[in-house]
Length: 191
Image 1 (cartoon, one colour):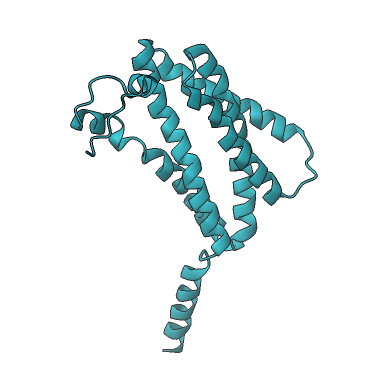
Image 2 (cartoon, one colour; image 1 turned 180 degrees about the vertical axis):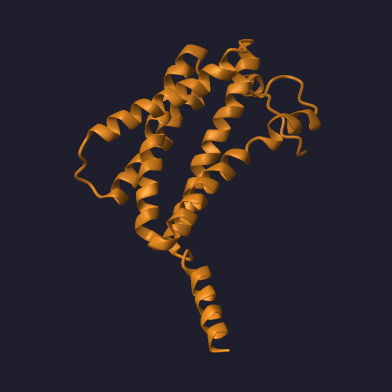
């Protein structure tokens, strides 16, 4: 009976080990990072439709990935004086700011070049997120914490896809959304 009580107590303690406010905040924040990546994929579809250039479906995500690769090379080659938490905050702010030029709905060449900027900071955000997760999670639960990190980004990414093609059709939208935004006639279907 004593062995059962010990096992039950250790199981209860093990289940609570990842219940850290810092980890929860990090994982929720990473969902937002994934949301932005998913939105980029949907945006590339709209750009391809509007400009009638199917190649944008692959070029825009490829440019984002190239920016991420180059950002990782630069980040890995430097020695950083700031703490991981500071680097995570700065990289997240730069990742967010990197999307702002795309709000102007640039032409394909400019959009392809501009999308490399948030891509360059994605690697820094993810690298710092792994280091932060490692610091906040108990050593015997780090693999589980890393799985939650990946899940958080993936949930954010996938949240963009279900309505990307279905909702516009359901509301009777016949023109590509980007064209409606440019002309100021986007319909929400709510009224």
